[in-house]
Length: 125
Length: 130
Image (cartoon, rainbow over all chains, first blue to last red; front, side, top):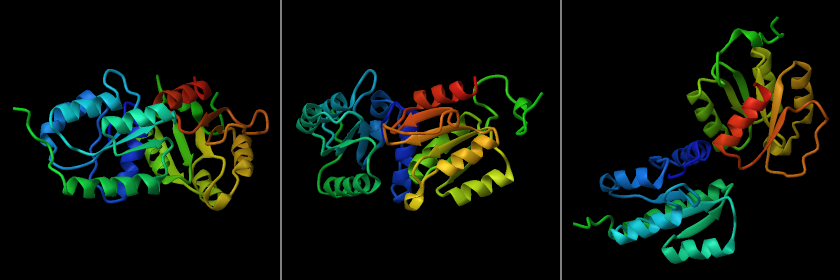
């Protein structure tokens, strides 16, 4: 879970942990990218609007370094062009906040199935 | 002079030491709120999802501040609970997904529209407890 807002980050972590997912939280895309080499398997749930590197830019960085980790993008502003931009960048889904618990859990489950069938992080070196 | 809930006993800055109850039927929001408030060293009771459970918490210890979702488990409205909290001099912060909330003037200290951020949460706490 990547979200610069502490409340959203904790609420999402509580929701996903209750659904038996192992959850790591990061307060920025940069913090997540720093930890990326240690993460072998998973699904990213990220906020769209974050300082420095936003959710769509994060997807760009991931794809550029060969990581196929599935990404679900969340946004408080349900703007169609942004949803389209996120999906074009490679997000598997774009959900509006506040997210429906069942919907998010279902998407994370789907994402993990997707990841099982795809190669994970590939070192750029 | 301290109030009936001994408000004057505590803290030098920030929400540390504030006694808060959480009345929220969306449990992950309640747990997220609790986690964040506890990080700020707020004394948190709940979350609870019904007015009956909220009344039980209040009977154990009257809080300084109550976060109250307007519509609780099973569609129960929280207006009566808000009135009772107000009678006990508890400052009420309503949390709701609705934009056109009607409350009795003076009974509610702040309204937080969901989804709200950490920053908005802190601002509301500062507003009710400067």
